[in-house]
Image (cartoon, each protein chain N blue to C red):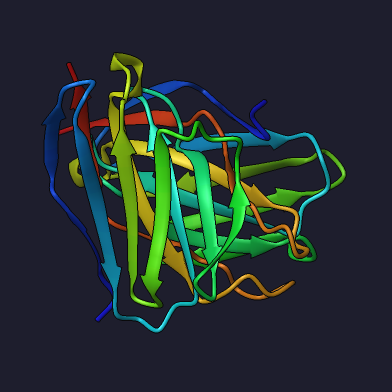
Length: 116
Length: 112
């Protein structure tokens, strides 16, 4: 299984809502990532988890809260978002973060988030 | 700031022609990768080239890397309409603070 799955595919939420994005992989990968992508722009890294521990936080606002319950799952909890947070949120995984290792990232299809 | 800068930003060709996209970067790298993204979808890894490699092939793809010029090119030969997508280069610097940084991308349109 070389697939990264993400749910939901689409999400519309108000600024006062609390929602969560979910990501799952069963490739035994130990690194998982969240990216944000605006239209016609490249993906921007938000968070990196390595062995279920937060490794990188790219100065993301606290209204985004990541969670890695186990090595296969990655969540992104959303609260009090702003309309400018509307974007495609991509999850990815890779074998690990070791120096000089082969670090191909496998991406999920993304969640299209609209904040009203 | 973006590590990678692709050019052209957009490229339109006819089916059967070759497509060449370029990527420049600013700092030393460990690996350089190319990804494809169909409209509004996730990214698909195409090929990885290490900093000590100069050229790599995979099917109809050919990637070159010139570390002295801090640049890479992706050549797609005998293009097909299904190759229509955005193509991104992405670099990493290795080390414990691993981070993959994407360039701005090239939108390739292959007309049937």
